[in-house]
Image 1 (cartoon, rainbow, N blue to C red):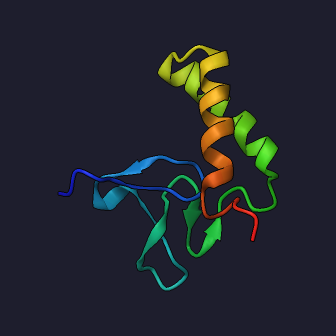
Image 2: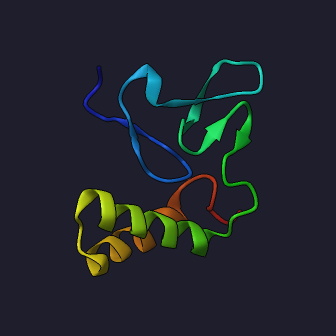
Length: 89
């Protein structure tokens, strides 16, 4: 596998294995989104705002990855707005 991992364009998660990828409506693997964010051609958190997505990701980073909240928020606030799902045209 390439050293430059593809990252989910919704949450920033590295997608290194086939099972990390979400699925399109036709059952094929999404080349943009992870399985946490995208299933069967739809976002699992359809309608969520970018701000709420950042809050959700910070909570996961703190509770599951033991990243200090201030650091997790700084990372999320820097990364998320630059991802495809959230980037302003």
